Image (cartoon, rainbow, N blue to C red; front, side):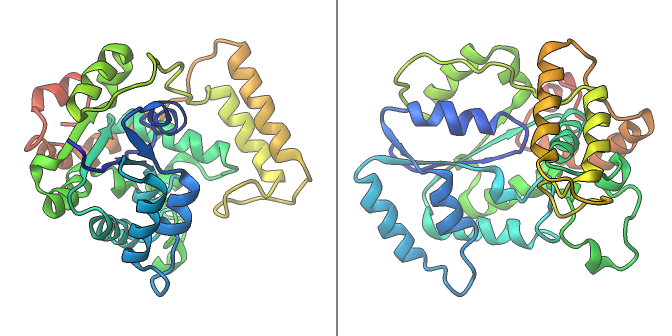
Length: 302
């Protein structure tokens, strides 16, 4: 197998570890950097994007090696939503133009834990909205266009996202893995993963601390301090900006959670009930490609 591997995501399924540690250590493939992906694929405007020019660039830097790409940006963002799905659809079509014979990789995660981690990420990025406002349970704006770029939980309707790539590439080229199974035994999982995709590691590596969700105390502390800094996300409410506070508060938050064993942040019961109802049908549809008992075992809404 020498086809390109496109690891699409999902966010909060150890994609950072794959980008920074795993894929750069593959012997028989060339891993495209995030800078290249951002500059040439994800954020090229529609007037400048030329798939043939980009294919030539990739050929020049990768040579005869198999190409690897891993980036959850193709699905949008956790602090911004990139519209109502247009960005995600555009990325899928661009990737198909560039790599029509690629193998597609998805890691999915129980929506309860995935969305808790997504909200934690949003707060660490400088966000201030409550969990209900972030998830869209409580509407922030009356006019639809005002919330156009807010985070959109529809990205976690796995059947729709994966179905788009199945339609483009065919079901045999789409590989779906459960983050929970990866997290349970990373070393054994990686062994089988390499066999599935026929990739060779330079050395034996295993991830550490896959789940970096904030503790409840740190999240509330960070959310409060975010009200006094511009932070790193445009979608927030703040009083005024104190220079350098954002970086200091993030460092303090990381220190607190690394030094103390504190309970991880969790949504309230009513939010979990909303998640159960919100994603139940999607996961039932997902069982077309993944055994329903596996999903139920790991607590996917069903």
